[in-house]
Image (cartoon, rainbow, N blue to C red; front, side, top):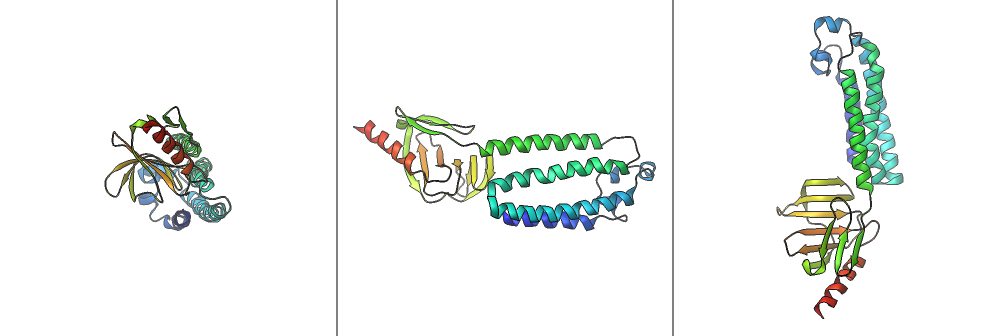
Length: 241
């Protein structure tokens, strides 16, 4: 996460100096599709001055605040920052940059609308990612809440054990992934499709394999999964007696 913050910060700083009057017609989105008449009604020099100042500010503020948030509050808060800060910054930039375009409004409203949709989508995803998961063992049944939760009988379990770490994960099939939180279906290095309900870096994790072949890894927030393992183990023992 820290490398991502630094990398994005440097990218914004590079953008500040990458676009100029000589290459704007090739690199600047929107301007490169204008007709010559439309370009004549566009204050390119004024826009590029703001473009440069904005990306210098964005690069420095993103790097400084991102690093401070990372060390002060951890990755969950940084996830919100990474997801929303650049989008909000670009929204303000697009609104302010409209004064340099003296053509009839065309794309700016679409761009603003698209950014607002992104803000809503990212916020929804982050809110879902922050939700806790209820793991309940009762009456020989296991209930796991949430979009990627599950309901199954203890008799449906083929094997159960505690493991120190996840298998190597190569890709996300469907779900939410923002370390240390992983929810949904993922693909392992061995090619297996597994369900992850991982809310922290705590260890050991609970591994459950059902008789239908589904594999599940679970660990709650800020503690290991030993409690859930003991509850299921007791249920299996009572079933066998």
